[in-house]
Image 1 (tube, rainbow, N blue to C red):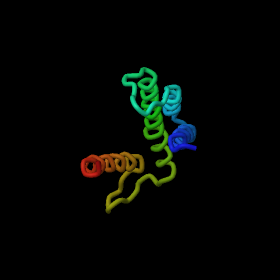
Image 2 (cartoon, rainbow, N blue to C red; image 1 turned 180 degrees about the horizontal axis):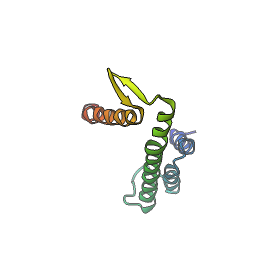
Image 3 (cartoon, rainbow, N blue to C red; image 1 turned 90 degrees about the vertical axis):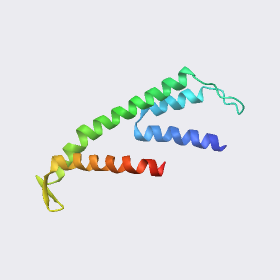
Length: 114
């Protein structure tokens, strides 16, 4: 089995495991193209559509899970207020603060890590 086949199969397995159908469509679009080592076709509509579907599926997943499921879950498993650094914070707002803090850290560390 060639390394390319292993990578292709693992990408397919990840797309099924995470439920991101856009990645599956991108995988199928790439598999239908002839693989050459010399040239790469640019602006192929199948590849562009596959990646567009991947982006759409990934965005929809994050939108539903992060805005609808996680806040409800975290509010149900915590008390009404949570004490953090000496301050009482409502459990519903704690998730928003944690996500905001992680994005601020990400914004500062991305230029250093990339």
